[in-house]
Image (tube, rainbow, N blue to C red; front, side, top):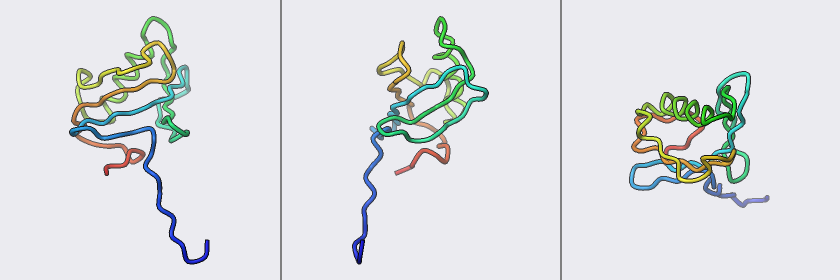
Length: 104
């Protein structure tokens, strides 16, 4: 690209709304460790150790995200995908952000 600057498009997997962070996640259960993997198209990949049985994965995911974002579990709300690997969540007023999550 000679002489042109390329603007970075905003990520599709997160959005800020009135101080709340809306995330689109692709959750990979039964992993060796809990970790934020990174963006993958319209979703952000997250690995968790819990199995996808009887809500254990969702509970584990909420505890993990609450710890990462410095909020009580009650501030994490499922917007969609409670029974799927592709999930949309709201994190109400996160007090901190992992490096992988932009703050703009």
